[in-house]
Length: 467
Ligand code: SAH
Ligand code: SF4
Ligand code: F3S
Image (tube, rainbow, N blue to C red; front, side, top):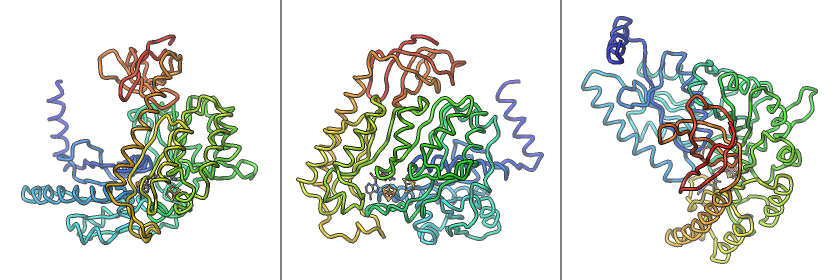
């Protein structure tokens, strides 16, 4: 049977069954936590007969899983909703239904406002309530427009199904696992404490069960996620207090799991146990994303980061003493209200001192409802743009120097997916770089020894040393 006839037969069967199979297209914006949430939503919807699709045209339901972190991110959602409105209208003309849902952080921040601004939207669901998405969709089918952004008293994860083995296998050999949500830090520029609510840690048994399920489905590398992942805390088997370091040691015992990572961390929550895990746990990859945002103590204080520049640098030194080959990555904001040229020079100095392997930098974006929005001395756009350009040039230079320093090294490579050329695979280095190497598709999921032979803009090249 050819593929075409198989497809026709499948369609035919659907028509005879009254076409129960519905398709959902999920567009994910923002951070890895949203990526994880999209997967969980897709699994929850599968129970109601929704199959995921990559093609918006054939979707019966389109979900935008949104991000509110900067103005641009939030605006993107409304322009996407404009396009979806036109699509929905056109479909209605053809007698075909289409539902539109907004989930994630814009949903939480704007709630009802989305229904007012975008009349085509059927459901608005916050990041804490998406286990109630199937029910909201049923109500919307009945003609209601549903907004559910109340923080749920029940634990959403208790109500969400975990995917079956075959499905996990299809998703690849690396996976995200959210262990902590929300934030109590209230940095003055940031919307996260308002969109994601206060800090909650998932219990150990729930995390271990999910990790085991992932490993059973072929996952070799798990990245633990949280807005403040290193603020995670829980209870060990004897009722003792556990921090993220303890959790990493526990997860490292799962047979078949090869690698662990975690992100994003706050400098204030890097405790000794976690640094100890970097020293002793070989499975914990030598990569740490530790945002600092700025290098001026005055600005750090105004941002409510609750540490100084030299405390941050001293912390990095302690971590490097524990794990000398660790790659440090960071986030930066330029043009926070009141930032002077001298403050910005402090940021450049800090970058010179730390030497980053990877970094993300942004122009300060005023977010409604945050304390930063109330501050006088907002920095003009062109000043922000100039500072960003200067900072990014320095960070890019450091990133290239780091990549160059890898050439000649023999490393363990986790083979992840097909490469650009036939006969090639892309793997992930311990430092999170993409590495191209000659290998067979059947080796996906294997960890092999390779020697780094060269670099290009976004990836490295390697030759096999031993399989
Ligand atoms: N919890 C993490 C950061 C989460 S948000 C931490 O504490 O570091 C991801 C990044 O977005 C932040 O590190 C910051 O660099 C950037 N960001 C957050 N709010 C911003 C804003 N209002 N304007 C510009 N960048 C912002
Ligand atoms: Fe936002 Fe600060 Fe919380 Fe990070 S620690 S999520 S930057 S408030
Ligand atoms: Fe964006 Fe929400 Fe993540 S605001 S960065 S999607 S926590």
